Length: 140
Image (cartoon, rainbow, N blue to C red; front, side):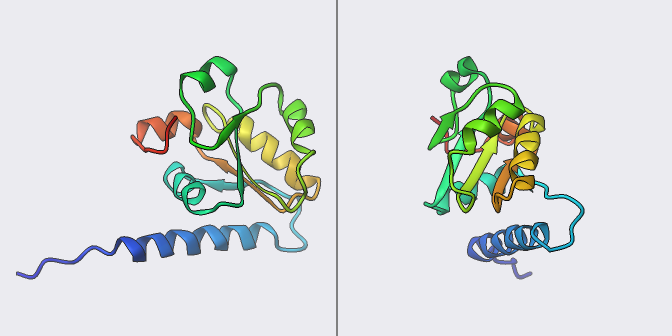
């Protein structure tokens, strides 16, 4: 019986294709309102590992951030509106990846920024809790 070979490169390309498709569909004209781009924890981690143009922000409280965070992440704390206000210092063309503890706050911030004309704001579905549950790496 032949074994089926694995193709990690093909899987990575497929994940990138799916992510780009999500990005393109999120930017379709005529959409009722702009929404942040959602990404599962594994794809989120792969993307920040492979893209050097990404700004990564951890929206959890400072104690959680100090206990451990994704590599390259900068801590931002506060309410959705105060965090969005801080992120407005970034160019609207910046590639922003944001995460919080469970995905709720980062979704709110992503939706606010996308509605204001930012083009690439991605948030991690399930947040850091999901990331830890999956046992992913890329941790400081």
